[in-house]
Amino acid sequence: MAEIQGRCDERFAAVKQVLSTNLDSGADLGASVAVFVDGEPVVDIWGGWTDEARTTAWAEDTIVNVWSTTKTMTALCALILADAGEIDFDAPVAAYWPEFAAAGKDDVRVRHLMSHTAGLSGWAEPVTAEDLYDWDKVTSLLAAQEPWWQPGTASGYHAVTQGYLVGEVVRRVTGQSLGQFFAKEVAGPLGADFHIGLDASNDGRVATLVPPPSLADQMGALPDDSVVRRTFSNPVVDARLTEQRAWRAAEIPAANGHGNARSVAAVQSVLAGGGEARGVRLLSEAGCNRVFEEQANGTDLVLGVPIRFGMGYGLGSELMPLGPRTCFWGGWGGSIIVVDLDVRVAVSYVMNRMDAGLVGDTRGLGVVQAAFAAALSG
Image (cartoon, rainbow, N blue to C red; front, side, top):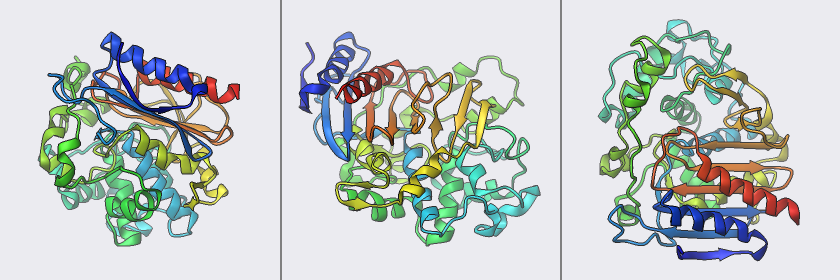
């Protein structure tokens, strides 16, 4: 039976059992799980291995690239600035970033960036993986680009571009990069070990990702001009990139955040607590509620499944049945965070064996279901 380290309140024993089962079955190689209730950790556990050769055990301070779970950190930064009156989600993006008005985008709103409805789910000009490390280049290309569909009419998952788009608005408003703002205003005050732009001093505790089938293979015979292929093939992001220092050091605020379940849940517990956690207030309750302003509800043009987007987070739908004030998002390979403002719970699962899913999978879903069953039972 897999050895599980950390702390788990007896009431949440089923959560620990889910992680143990995943590790025993081989579904997981190494993983961590955290549950915060009223801003305090009731589950903070981990187990397994940081590498496929099983030479190093997953430790308390192990972190890993969590892919699109990073988007919830970027969204939270924007929500904080909106709550402070520094960003207006209904304002044109060009009000903060004048160059963005090019190619007919003068009426694209900040809320369109937050909800994947801006029509900029990929780059029209050729982009290499190395270009993702060049903030000015990739944001300038997006500013000059014509939308691929009418902004605001449908969502099309901005898998990598969303972080640059929202991050550039944050940079124009604050004078700080998204990673700098997050570190100073969010992770620092909360004591959260989550990084958007990772210092080399942390490399020794980063778990190695085990890649899923390549995105190129998953796209199969899609036509070259399909929105899906254009989003994911320029560039094709290989999960092995995460082992490179250049990837870790860059700020890719939709995809390269590094943390563990504890740090993800610690940050998002602020949202679960109506803007406050562990004595730190980052948002008003009204500022938190903006998450639930529906921006899109229908079949996503990129993911091809029905998704309901609020302001920066996914909301409950037929595909993802959640409470009325519950929001979520997940990352390529399986990581996930689910936040319920009524139950005041944040649940996170982070792992290094990647599955094919782009926004979570059944391993994380099992953790979430066990956590909420326990939370509601009390």
